[in-house]
Length: 342
Image (cartoon, rainbow, N blue to C red; front, top):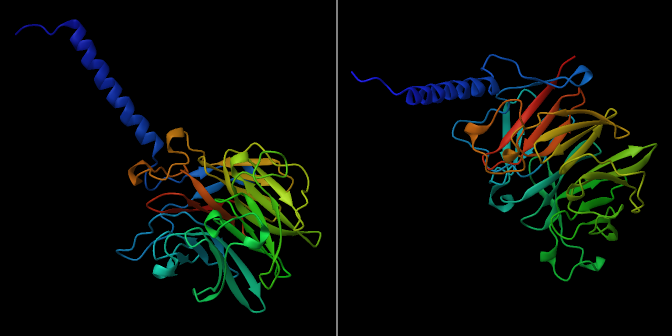
């Protein structure tokens, strides 16, 4: 038997060693089923709840290009682009119901929930229909709101594409034209147009894709927190359009912001969740995806998902107990619960 050339033997050894190391690295990245995945440190430690959000047999979420939020009872509402436009789970991830049908398929993007007396209503920003809708929690449509041509910002309705909507305690409705011309519009409680502010640009007070809105009361007055995505910052305004304070920077592509109990959670499309305190000071980055090619990408297949790593966070909400729910922008649909560790 002839001897194997020394260089060939070394080559095969390197190939086998490389393959072993690759397999070892892959195993290290993806934890086993019974291994806990914990993110963050100190008061911002969370467990990634594996397999949260079980669906009925045969049901698929489809593209999750919308919002996630909670009602007073703690039920979790999620948007998809399918006929299951609104999917509802309990806090443990049990599927409760879904609705929408063909009428709402393909574009429910922003959601806000508002208490009116004993009842709660959903306000939906629909980018496909280019309108805002008010519905019951069961999906019955109460009214629709179209493009505010009277604002003078549009020549035709096709120029606006509302991505987010919030409602003030006095009934004023605020809509972000995030995929249109980057204006924020205010309507009174009867849906009459009042004013616009922001507009396209990079100067402080201007906006570039105001993708998400959050409204909170500060010393009894409504303040608007705007995810100014392509300017990589958050900005605050009052409902007259006056800018409040300095922008909060240090973000990649913020899609949404939610403030609760002294914290702000930011869904950053470029692969991570960010927690800030009420002043904008950084508390934690969570689930930062180390692979830049998977960030802000809709088409990442399921076999490339990793527990503990986000892909393209599109919406995030804090629960009253400090847990966080996150919807990734993904063609297959992905929703995650982070349970705060105490």
